Amino acid sequence: MAVSDHDAVLFPGSFTLKTAAEDFSVVPPFEIRAGAEQRVPFLFNSPHSGRYYPERFLAMARLDSNAIRRSEDCYVDELFGGAVALGAPLLAANFPRAYLDVNREPWELDPRMFAEPVPSFCNIRSARVAGGLGTVPKLVGEGLDIYSGRLPLAEAVARIEAVYKPYHETLKRLLTRTHARFGYAVLIDCHSMPASIRVGDNGVRPDFIVGDRFGISATAALSETAIGLLTGMGYTVAHNKPYAGGFITEHYGRPARHLHALQIEVNRGLYMNERTFQKSAGFDALADDLTRFSADLMAMPDHHFVDLPLAAE
Image 1 (tube, helix red, strand yellow):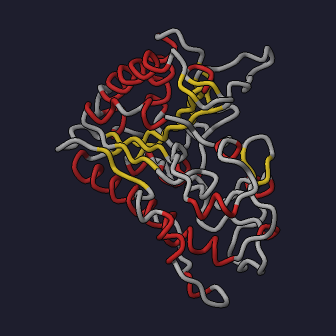
Image 2: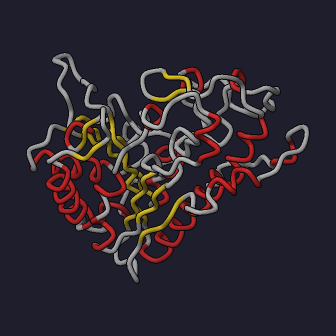
């Protein structure tokens, strides 16, 4: 499950990781929240809820401190935080999504962003790059440019080497350890979506969207159970559209190897004011529901995750 075979020495010129590392010299770029012992084969991941914006990054950006938060999955780590007391570790980003997006390939870069040419191995033609949402994002929110000019290529390399790679190494280690202990591992990738999202011909606003890469990243029983639990609580739930899961779900979900990954998107309108970024009155009730949801999901029998038909990968 290596995320990259390319080394920084392949890039022309010289660069240092010092600046990117110093961005998080006070606050770590990410953290593992866990109890004394992992009691369940589940791992929760919140890669987009980071809200520590380094001063150096803010000085590079053209947006103010509110506008730059438009892509942040605000408070998602707190919403799913109850899983930790239930025995599941939670990996949470402190770095913001506008700074670096770990739910992308490692070298998914937009060449228009940089002063120097990007190496040939970079993925410059993905739909995410075209939309301004590569590994080092160009845009936040509804098409707002983060930077006023081009960045040195070394800046992107430093962020990937100092933050992206350690994040994925940590995620892989947690999954490997979970699989070794329990015989399988289930990754719940936690996100939020704008309240403006609508699905279906009738334009229904979903409270949640459960994504399994259209059945590729997880056993059907996991998706069906997740949808059933949330629906049973009175929520409106969509499946895979418009969010089927990003790089993390696609990369780590390998059901034939007893590795399952499910993405869950929460509608921000349920728990916060998207204009002020303040929690709303519904926050605590939603967090309680998600703790109950997590407990019920983690109570699924083992056979749903290991007794699977053989399939080629």
